[in-house]
Image 1 (cartoon, rainbow, N blue to C red):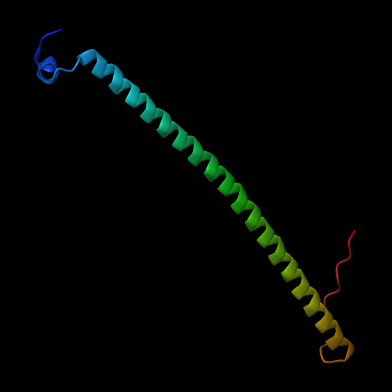
Image 2 (image 1 turned 90 degrees about the vertical axis):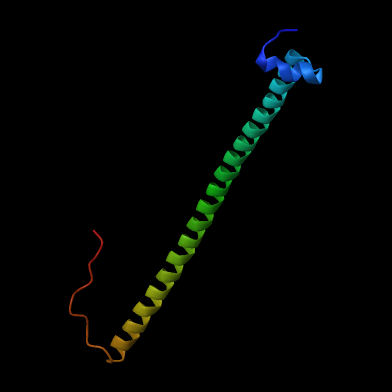
Length: 99
């Protein structure tokens, strides 16, 4: 067995230094594999969560625009009814036509 200050503890406990070193490296390998698995899982989770949130926000945006268009249509109807009943003056600016 080698001698030196770093081997004294192992000599006094009767432990093989090289066997300890191999076991320590195996533990480090398991820890690094676990950390890598957690990081990959977290990345996948965040990616899926981002896509889900984005799709949900697009759906809410579409519903919001549909609601605004419906309100706009109702207001235009009310204005045209009020103009037909002479409650509002006639339109001063002509409507633009699509070309």
